[in-house]
Image 1 (cartoon, rainbow, N blue to C red):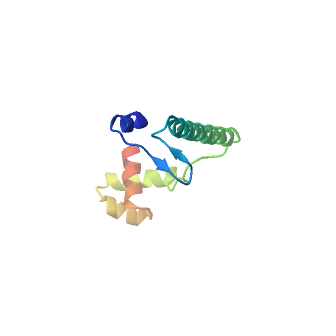
Image 2: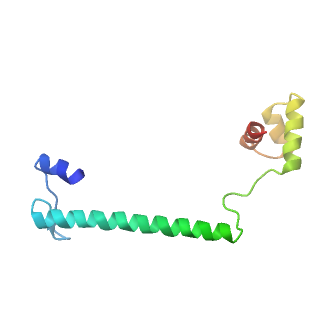
Image 3: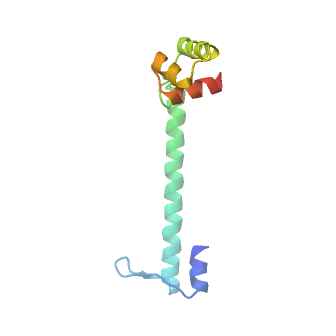
Length: 108
């Protein structure tokens, strides 16, 4: 644990504004309490995010980016690749990026 490592090395934190000093037992408890609250807050945010994603999914919403390609475009990319055209030439002809052509060919 972070605080025990600091204690082993005889290091403390003194915050004048917040009014705690980790070299005292009360300051140590306050520091641990702040850590507990921040962990709880992170978990609450995570739970709300997951609940929101589940709700959106149940409502039929599609998550993520829109697909750039469709089945017709994918077939055209594969056809051009079978004709031994370069990925750059295919991208230019179909009107998508080189990365999209590469990804499409990898999946196909």
